[in-house]
Image (cartoon, rainbow, N blue to C red):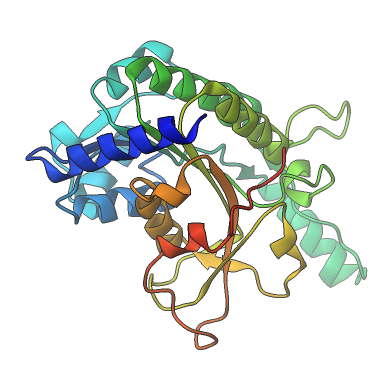
Length: 296
């Protein structure tokens, strides 16, 4: 992408934002804990007109209750349904992807770990085991579902695509990749690797993008910590790498109109509350990287 293309896109975003119609933003995965916060924060601003895409009836009810959404602001669809995605993205200026495969813990595995720890007193009792629901594996959601979202956004003429991913994508042996993986043939799992594949696809799509890799997500208030940014998982070397979901949402919202966020991939964490200077302007984080972006 040329500097001229990026400037033109930014000017178009500003023109829409300053006109009587706010930026229409589709938030996919709006029924999840992070996506719901992105939707809420966008709805609180007159500059945005968010639409939340959710999968289940339960998520629809939750978004109405917590996000304050009305029927016109909610689309119920599956991200593996290309036709539904195309319809949802029609007329949208931007997209914030908050979808992710969600593992389910196997109850028996918890009992097994507790037995080894409490009864057998083993120093290393192992970890509980997880599985992904049929149709909800990392390959299906984090790769194929994300790919469909990117394709639909490009076809719809979306001007900026914000992708909420995860830190750890440079580490094939990261523990998160083992979740849901079969002990027999090694199939399944690899959630970070599938996310990484989708990120590469977005970068090569020609869409203007911002990719955000949060550290450990915690349910804490926004605007109470100093946020830290980096690239290529360098923040994993910090002893503290948590970040509140609400602050991730703030960074997503800022990325929609911030020129320095264009075609940028970054890692996001925070310092413990009470340490450092609170980050009042999340939009300033992008320029603070000095032109650095994650290497693929």
